[in-house]
Length: 180
Ligand SMILES: Cc1cc2nc3c(=O)[nH]c(=O)nc-3n(C[C@H](O)[C@H](O)[C@H](O)COP(=O)(O)O)c2cc1C
Image (cartoon, rainbow, N blue to C red; front, side, top):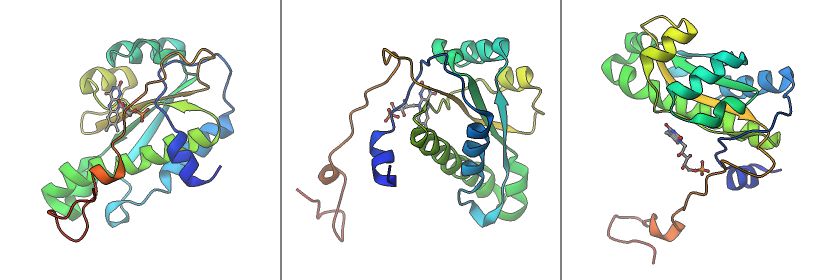
């Protein structure tokens, strides 16, 4: 599938079948994330791949997203803002840290879609609870919890978002000249 079709067909999935995922596929996902562009070429984020049943359950509870523990893997991405601060100051810490992780996560979501896998980016997380569960030191910030798996057969958990039409969000040359 080409990039445009992957982008178009990717959908958030919160509920998964019990079909296992090959370890190579998870490595591929993380490698795709690693290759995303980063501000100043600084890679301040890292991953934890979680497959332990109890930890997945606890993550689903902490994230208030009950079915994500049906995924064979949940990837947790976290960043060390200090690494950006030394080069970019406060802006780097607060903004680039989010932006870098967002690009890495999008690569994960698209790579997953290419493999026929479903995924979700859960960004609203309880920082302290996840850090405690996964023994992540306090200085890091959790950027996302990403369940990965084959979507459940009945499609349960596939969220249908409404997307604006291109003309509704596009201006030509200036703000006042909106495409109609
Ligand atoms: C920055 C960001 C944060 C998100 N955070 C959450 C979240 O905390 N919990 C959740 O259930 N879904 C979360 N999502 C998933 C969105 O709800 C989902 O992508 C959106 O509804 C569009 O659906 P689609 O991905 O199928 O196009 C997040 C998505 C993005 C891009």
